[in-house]
Amino acid sequence: MSTPSIPVVATTPMSMAPQALPVGPDQNWPTGNKWLRGPFAPWAEESHGYDLPVAGVIPADLAGALFRISSNPRFQPRNMDRYHWWEGDGMVAALYLRDGKAAFRTGWVATDSMKFEVEQGEAVYSGFVNGGTPGRLPQGAPPAKNVANTNVGIFDDHLLVYFEGGLPTAMHPQTLETYGSYDFHGGIDVLCTAHHKTDPATGDMLFFAATGPVITWYRADVRTGQVIDSHTIDIGVPALVHDFVVSENYAIFFVAPNLFRLDLIAQGRPGVVWDESALPHGTQIVLMDRRTHEVKWYEAGGVFAPTHFYNAYEIGDEVVIDMHRISRIGNPADALTPLGSHEWFPPGYSWQWRIDTATGKVGDRRVSGIAGEFPKINDDYVGRQHRYGYFVTTRDLAPETMTDGLARHDYLRDSTTVVEGPHPLTSPSEPVFVPRPDPTGEDDGYLLTLWWNPETGLSELLIHDASDLVTQPLARVGLPVRVPFGFHGSWADQSVLDKSVSALRVTD
Image 1: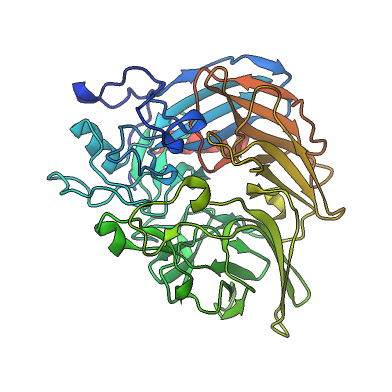
Image 2: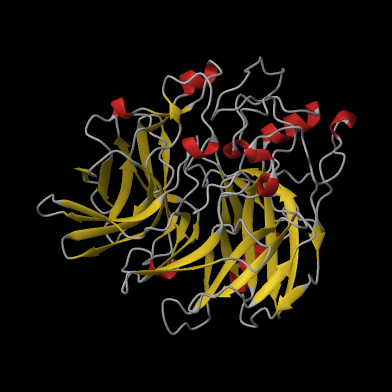
């Protein structure tokens, strides 16, 4: 992929047709759809700021950038009543921390489909989750929309934004200029997952692509960005496989009856469906040996869907898997109209599976009775036994928000600590763990989360001590914008950020 010259300042937002100019950055379209209101409501402008206001103290040893991707529809959806959170356009929010100070920048992920909609001055693509009103695409439109809204992080000296319906999009990590599609130097050709893991032994990227009834496993070299290993697994059904996990020797996938049906989308019907008849033996666990590519299947013991994983590790012949599970995801397979948000996506809980690879025995237990989502660990412990897991709570089925607290689970003590944000903050994002330099233990670091202030309608960054989780954070950083509630993000240490910026400058 060629890299154009890098400007020293942010690029000017793409021009829009006159009828598409927003009334203001804080959009308020006439709808009661939860996914377009409150913390999910769109923000129409790219922004930047320096020396942001801070309550408390940003730790002096916290230097680098927090990258978050938001689901932020740029134009009023064609069917506002059927619009779903998964369908918003991608906007990256980058928060740069150094020497106790904070700066930020936001920028649209200018995919080809977004550029086309900007030229048209309106949304031209119909929804895929809950269906909509499909129409003939205007001449010259890309055949499908790449919303680039699910995950973001630095790899191969580029800031990559992921979406499971297309290739990643490369951006500059400082200016947030969009370069274009990224294919791992020709290593992938259609799409890849929004989730990846870092091999603890080599630093290589481990990831996969789910296309219909097939999962393709990939390994990309951290030094060159080249794909150096791949293997295809036939899973038999077009399951919506969003996340996975790795242990020392295995790549682990859960295959559940939450399906992605392109044929239904073409009819304007809900395309993400729950169809238990597709898996008569219930949810399945797939273990692929990362060395030999040997694949083994296990019954998970029931019908449910995984949401996101903490980690997996091995103790002798036993593989231990920690994740959040949910009773169902999606609309009924025969649905003509969509379910409500809480019926579509009920609360999930932390669970643990233990698979004895010698005997084939599978055991499971619920780890915590506190509903939550977006589980995370200290990523230095990927593939090896961890003690702590972090997540955001979803205890209240609120009409406006999804999350309502920040939690830490101690697997050794089998206890969960929950804190809420300082009043009036709520709706915390997925926590990102940042280890201190030369850490003395697994929890020696910081938790970074974005929260919504319903009184101002804006976002704040909270920095907590991960080893002593209390309501009052170490620092509250105020943003003059709202970052619409999104999915995932990552941290880049200053050395990683500097290397990326330097490498891109060299390629000019």
